[in-house]
Length: 407
Image 1 (cartoon, rainbow, N blue to C red):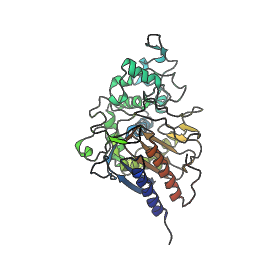
Image 2 (image 1 turned 135 degrees about the horizontal axis):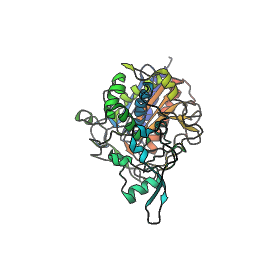
Image 3 (image 1 turned 180 degrees about the vertical axis):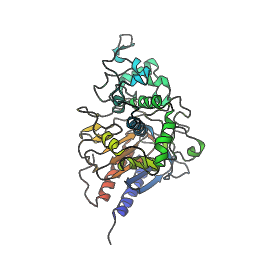
């Protein structure tokens, strides 16, 4: 009897999902899917939406998507570039005067007061999309954490205008630092269109892709299917964070982290990038825009590891240590083949609640793994995701030995 790749993927994927809910330090539940250019080729769910709860994890479970939001914001910006309404290399202050008022943090005085200076150059939308504008996050940067703890800088989780008005960590264009850059890019999109970011997404991205369960506002219909966030204790135990939600009525639609949605919806978004911008109900981006966007836009700069500065929110984290990584306009790019089987030039990223995805345009395959666990870089969830991606490549290439060894 010949075993098909689909059957192999089903067996391998189910085994990985089952393992992470039965591990010594388990996740409560997980949903994972794989797609090719035409449609979903694997769909799996295991565990429960809440540890100790009665609702099983199902493919239509709703997740806080965190930073997987960023690529959607980049897509909306690229649409405006296509229309001639946005120049990636023009100063962003032409659309947002307030971003031109920000200064560079130049250390702290003896009394602890932040010392700032004017930036050497303007921030552009390209800087924002490539995380080279100078913004950071307090859970990945000690200086931002000090601004929060000593000077009351609001967290990005507040989704307020005040949370965006942070000093820059360096002059725009000088290095890569992961942070609130794409939240500002979302504000550029709003300024150009004259609409709230959620409305732009709904009409210009979600509708042509058939994404009906993705939104900045968690209503009762979606809340009924939402997974509970869980906190990992120092002893490995998992505790439900009952009542935890992203800001329900945000002052700012945060283009860097604010969406809720399902794995199936996000797979439609991944499939659009595999299919040169085509969606189920229309074209989202032109093929030439897609091809341009997915190239390395960092030049000689590189993506670096993420240091976990606030232990409750993130561990130290890095995709594929030792593998050179760049950034396109919406995604991280691995410059070299990854140990999972992902080829050089493939795309991917993640979300704070331990959500991970990849997009392999060379082989026409991508996938998404979703849990709701803090801190980021959770050993069980992140390790399970890497096993899942490895299993997908092994199954889809019908090769019993994946290329490389998972690190």
